[in-house]
Length: 499
View 1: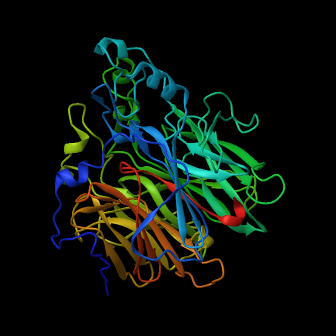
View 2: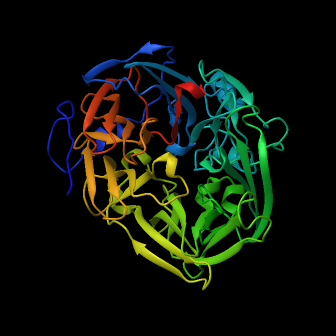
View 3: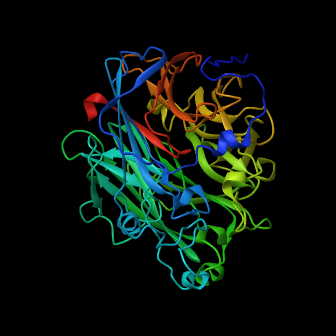
């Protein structure tokens, strides 16, 4: 049975949406705030919820009248929302990358964007400029005593977890080489091997691709130090944004995709626009044994994967000599064409993300595919305590309608066993971002906790923080954010005792 949780501060009952309501969120962030107490619009903030909700995403979308070509090219802006005894305080800062500081001073774009943004000036000036602009805009996590702003094509930027001051580009105490890739999508092992750890990777692409798998200590003395690493080589070009973990395996899905660098070299397209699916070739699952698991030091295992394109995985777990991986599949790589305005994109022309389950039989090498839901979705997660284990519940952002594409307007709690759903809807004039599920520390019940999500209220032209009960998605509180924040990317939660 589905349940709607719409609130009075987001009026209307139509299933449709207004394009201007959605696109109006795309604007430059014009202020940086320090320790502002948020106004509660409705409800009450749970007093048990103590810690900090960090978010990352594009905050600079236009310079001197020139708009970026794709939101993913926008400079990273970090938001922190600190919860303490029912009070929420707000901070935000741009990540002071080298490129951000140079472009702020010049008042124009000096670098090309991976997703098609061109430098200001004549088109010919983009040719043969192969520098990648580290925009630090994709994710934000805490590792040791530093906050890391992540962008997967290069190294992380280190920040102060409280003030959000940028310390600078970090090589993690010499661990990373200059401009070495460091994933924007780490996975946090809740303690499969005695203690919690962060598992992440870097990928070096080419005709052969190399994955560097790394595991870090996250608690106690030497938090942030490297526990283990390994490097493995694979045939083919790898476009890997995300991966999944189980106690024994790190699981990657190599999309069947080709990279033609010539348009990028000639300045005609961004690097990501040079990616093209190869429909006649099979995608592959790459299973890399974790050094702490039962298959330590063994070679990776490779399996054929279903057709489609995957950005994000929900979770993975081991069962009866099989690996189960839940992922969001697109029919093809979604992109914004060179002459297309991302603010006017027609959702009907874009593939929708569909949640599917793949069962990889480690004995027979057979892979079985099962569609879990027909509803367009993104940004899915399970209770962090069950990362890498079998979970019954998941939380995600979805389109308003049950089928077809559309902007993300609902939060969905999905029962992965019984295939039943609860919903909280911001439609028709509200739009949601990635939900973050925060479990109650004192509870062993899987769905006991809260869901935090930033939304864009298209009627009020305002960003809001919404807090939901993670059990039934009942509304707990809506708070007013003092600045307008564009549709963002990933975020994380840090409990108060870990700050």
